[in-house]
Amino acid sequence: MKPAANVTLAIPSIGVRALRVIPYTGTADDKPGTVIQDRGLFASPRGPAGGVGPGEIGNFIITGHRTAHGKPLARLPELKTGAHILVTADGTTYDYVVTRTMTISFRKPAEKAQQNAPVPGHPGATPTHPMLTLSTCATPEDHAAGNYWHDALNNPEHRINKIATPTTTRRP
Image (cartoon, rainbow, N blue to C red):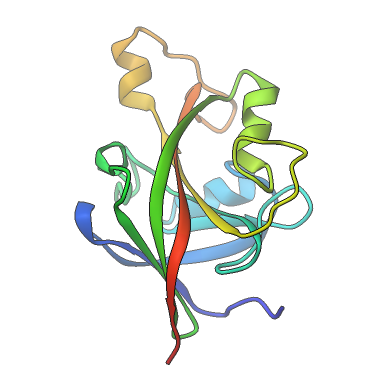
């Protein structure tokens, strides 16, 4: 499948409106992804160690900042099960619905692998349908607990991931 040239993400319930999603080859929250996020945009890792594109079978991963660079995911923890996430790719809109929340630790490789797995939370499982992992930092929660650890890219220990599945697709 040819990658979409123009992808945006909107989350009406928390005020995120059609912000650009930039694909890159890599894994969630690596250096190339952080550079994209530092521009106030969403980053989407692709390839063998990353995810797939919108509407494709597997894990479509999108990361964004919560406490810096425009704070596009400042309110992500408020996103409830059943909330809609709208991804528009070259005019086609995929309506994903949040099914669960998964928090992972960057200090635990097995947990980080859950975020990047083709089936979120289940490394080694074979995907059978499209899924979305929307991920941001848990910096406020970590700091409130006295945890100031961060990696070389300033990622805090924990990530908040909202896992969603598509319900409808609207084509132009």
